[in-house]
Amino acid sequence: MNNESFSIVAVLSAIDQGFTSGLDAAAAKAKSFSEGSKISMEDIGTGMTVAGAAVAAMGVKSLDSFGKFEASLNQAAVVAGGTAKDIGQLDDLANKMGADLPLSAQDCADAMIEMARNGASIGDIKKQFPAIAQAATAAGADIKATAGVVQEAMNIWGKSLDSPQQAAAILVQTANASNASVEDMQQALATIGGSAGQAGMSLQVTSEAIGLLTNKGFSAAQASMDLNHAILQMMAPSKVAKDAMTSLGISFTDAQGNMKKFPTILRELN
Image (tube, rainbow, N blue to C red):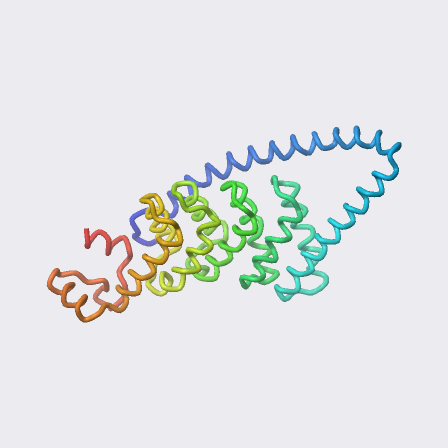
């Protein structure tokens, strides 16, 4: 546990309460939808015995949808470096998430492609996707965008994060507490992630900083660009900046030459 200005445990604990209640509600809605669908299909079934042409039309549409779903799973498996046997496992996972949460199996398959394009392996997808699906549901976010940003966060901060669940929880907390949606964070982290990682800024701190600026009227894109510029300047200040810092008794590095924690820098500047 580090000494940042807030506790990861406290944040995640608070988020977990929201996750639990949110997912319970989502599950209830999914169940209600499922029961309603059964009733509707029974009613439709009676009419379908009369309308043979309609049956054929709907059957073709279903086959088209199934073909698209299988094609998406195949693409995800290939991009992630998997084999034919992996497609069945992704199929099971997509259908399970589609059954457990108010998500379609097709959307889940498309999100898996997004993860693979961002560098996820088959093992990463199987391990991380449930947390991503839950995060998308809790934040009311697009699952494809959520898959991309969580995978992006894991690529940058994976070694410092306990799990994909933690990354997803941090991003959902930011989305719920600021004007930066999960979708916004995808581009924002692409802009600032590399510099933030080099400067020793955690995903928690980076997301919090972007979120705070969006609450001050900045767009997430502008906030990430401005923060990225500030980080680069702190990592390699100009001579003029160094002289000004010396006169003010300010340093962005500790005795070992490492970048200080971002909240520490802000406190000292304040």
